[in-house]
Length: 121
Image (cartoon, rainbow, N blue to C red; front, side, top):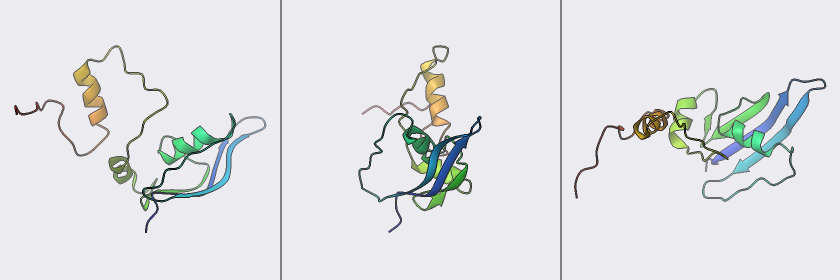
């Protein structure tokens, strides 16, 4: 069975003097249907790891697979399969509801068009 998430040799280093190593050689596997959490103190690399898994950050080294698909090769397919709930979501005060729905709909290649109205029951 293909794992939901597979991370191998994950490294994230931020340039600084000295460089900041946020994630150092992480190996991780989460199976489909499994409930998994990352625990650790502030600065342990939890958020960085999740942002790499979500495709929001690029790793310095290592591989990430989501449902057997690799970031950097299958980006569109992965984005169409996953949903993400960010720590903070701030909707723009300058966008209308329709514009906000259109923005979020644009993240996926398939779905209901924002202009479509539900049919009467």
